[in-house]
Image (tube, rainbow, N blue to C red):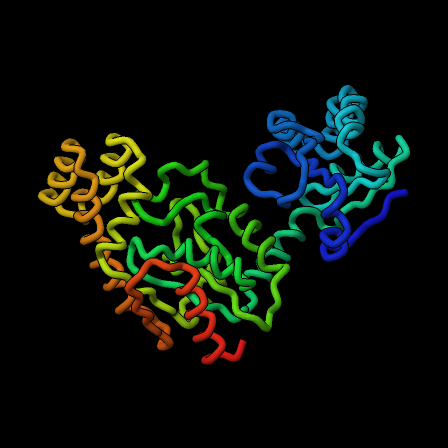
Length: 344
């Protein structure tokens, strides 16, 4: 049996089952359903060849060429599926829910599997993602100068039962010139959006969502414009920690990287840092004085952050001075204030 499912039903029912994305590996790597497995009907080169045939010779010749390509691989498709399937159900999609998913569904059904096809394909999923990102959740943006430990506080908020989105974790980047150090390769902006939507779809829309203050770009990925517009006008809770504590955290976070890695990162901000300060930072690294190099970077980032705060569009800016780096205490203070102000 082959059934067509809407995007809502497909996502609801496919989560615990084998979900096949039959687009090419290039399409899949650019953006995908987070729980999908790639089984390309055509690989990158084959898809290109069939596409050229369609444009130059017409649909029928392209279909015949596609059949020649797929016919040799049908048994391998079944062999791929057999060790992965948990029960007799398989969920399948392609780009628009057309011939590729239809062909794979026919083959799997012929072998005896119950197959569910996503109506509208991955394209319908992208509409679903963008609609989620455009929703106006009750965001509270967590701000603070570099070294304030915002990510640690976010994680503690999560431990205390709050809804959070860790944008830097999803983007594989910490948002600064040093943010790529020790990180995995960044996803495409499209897949970053998919990962964000995967978080949002489980949230209670009546309760606060905590999120770190970021620019619209995090490394090489961009925040969706509708999502970004919501954040720009959301309440901003700013953590204020003493410089000595922030400096210690920076040394702990970045002191583990090599001099060459840190020099490269300083090179990314040489124009904004100024040639003299850049030279001082490089000299400090060569002398193994990580604390001095961090102090130079901190001075630059503090000025940049303060300038950014002055340009914020939101009128709801609240500052929270703390003298100790106690994430549990800080998180509880933020929750209590959010409850007092916004009744969560």
